[in-house]
Length: 194
Image (cartoon, rainbow, N blue to C red; front, side, top):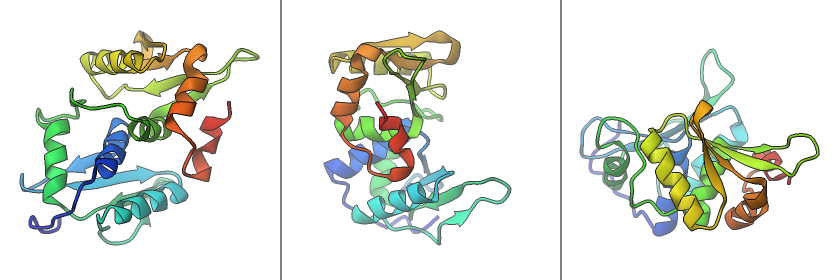
């Protein structure tokens, strides 16, 4: 997809945003081992346009138009291929499957995008809400490493074996939501409904 000679400047902010998406459902693909493209699918058209606009702000161009995916209620975004995105790809896919790079920093931007992608606000009855981060696509080693990093940030996080996910205690929910800041899109504001 695209020319291998395309270049973009990946600022710290751009890399954090992309890596937060990769913790969720974002994907980097490559065919040439010289460049990579970013792609994402969402049931929310608003979110796909947010993805496109955000990446355009990072000088990452879209390929084609955002279109519905045939047979499902979802939309797909695909970027041009860039040499700099291949550098990110190496950190996440070097061993043939998506793995969490162990130099990843869980900044507010990384955590916000991850939460939008794979987070749930759990409200069991009248008990204070907790958070679940779906990590079923990652190895146990990756999930336990992410829990350690969340604990280093001061959040009470534990492993849920039955669904290979991360549980952030109700005692840390508000602190986590404060850490990641406001939701950038209306379609996911419900996840901030503390």
